[in-house]
Structure formats: structure tokens, C-alpha cells
Image (tube, rainbow, N blue to C red; front, side, top):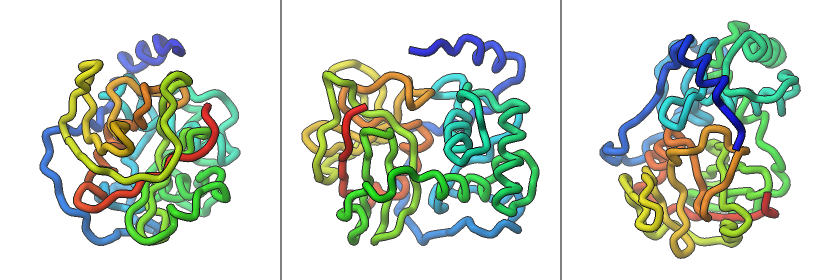
Length: 260
């Protein structure tokens, strides 16, 4: 795996703000869709996990230290690179280069230029950086809730009644434990699951296809480093978000794409 020692050292100096949720949280039913599209909304606007394209605010000094102290900086940097405004390798540290890239993107989108990845900036950025749209299976766009995982590009898209609601960066099974391709549905959920094989926490687990699951990972920091034992690893915050949107509904799952 890549070494994150330098990032940890910077985190100690800067003080990384954590956005961590306890797995021991009551399940709430999915409510109405709340779109985040107006560029005039205040940067401090209240954040809801049910917002379309939702992420927490990410700003200068934030750093992805570990799975429990994570500000989505890696994701921000990857998406800024795909948007063509960030021209170096993601580090997980929001410094001056990342701040300048956010400003370039905001200027390009006609948003207020602050250098802070607000909810509105994230909404634009996630929408603009959905990759391989043409390869997303048609079944994902049918009625109901669908979580669709592209193994090749480490991307999950969430659909509801034909409309895309969100997308997350994830990691799936390694070469020996490849996440199985095909269509299935969630048959069991456990908000505080612990693996009986490996003894590791799997918060917000939603099981499908004979024991594979969408779940929060206590190990994933850079989604393009390492793999799982077959499950679809998500950032803990993202797994919590998927849970709150879908745990009270039938969730269909599609896994497709070549292994990478």
C-alpha cells in the first residue's frame, strides 16, 4: 500500500477535523428529495445526508488521516483531476494547490469563488465527474432504488426511479476475491456488523449475492489503493449515507465491469 506517513505528519500539525458518525445510530426512513443546485445558497447551509450529490464541506487544512478521520480530500482531488483543474497526484491533504484547483473549478462553473468545497460545489463536481456513463446498465435506471458498482473504475452510482441520486468512490474485491458481477438485491442488513471471518467492523452493512455487502471500511483511505475480500468497501460516512437513503427500501444491486 502507499505510504501515508507524510500526510499523517501534516495532519498532526494542522489538526484534521473529523466527520465521524457512530454506527449505533437509529435507522430513519428515507424522506423527500432535497436538491442542492442553487449557486446562491449560503456556504454554511445545513447539510443533509439525503441531499442529492451530498458531501460535507471540505476546505484548506483538511486531511484524510485514516478511515475514522476523513474529510473526503482524496475524493475531492480525484474529481478535480477528472474535471481537468487539478494536475498532480492526490495526496489526501487540502493545501494551496487543491485550494487553487477548487477556485478554478468554481470559476469554470459560475459559482462563488471561495476555494472551499461547499455542498453546492460538491453537487456540481460529483455530477460532472460521473465516469463511463454510457456503460451503466439499463437496469439501474428502472423503477426502485439501485446501487450500481463498476469494478473497473471503483465507482458506485445510486439511482431512484430512473434518476441518479449520488455517486461514491469505493473499492471491491482483489484478484483472488473478485466481487461477483450480476444483478441481485439486498437480503439482509446489519448496522453494527462484525465479520465472523476476519473480526473487523463492517458498519452499515447491506448484504447481497450470497454474503457480499456494501459496508463502511475501517481501512480505506485512498479508494484506489488495495482491495477487499469481495465486499464493496465505502468510506464509513458514505456507507452511512447509503444506509439512511435505502435501509427502509428494497435495494437492487448491479455489479459490472472488468476487474481492476
